[in-house]
Image (tube, rainbow, N blue to C red; front, side, top):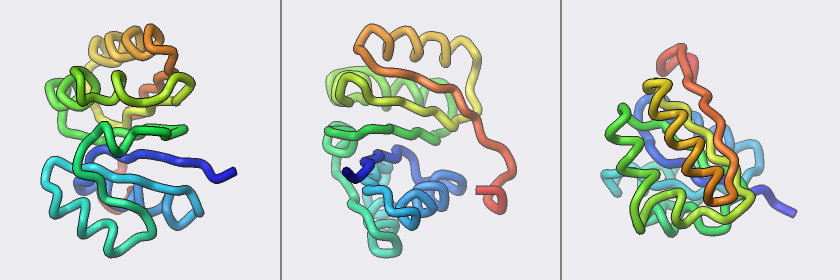
Length: 130
């Protein structure tokens, strides 16, 4: 069985991180606010660019996010088109954004209510580390 991952946020850090997953044989679906960036990624790596978050996270075993800050996290995690509403029960949500502890606690509780796991895993090292 192939592991499926969604990667939300293809900035300086997220773009290569999603690429490493794809190169490791994981089926990766990506979404980015600017769809052109997702299409560029899909042209460079084996994986799929998605037009919506809900499309990217549907049937994902893991959902990784690497976005700007707290408000960006709320925008991609909450609401009818967001990660929590559309990722399957049992999915593990992993946030790589350097965000506040309060937002991580909030998202962890929301994910738990939806039957999903949540891991706060901020990254460091900049583009070279990613």
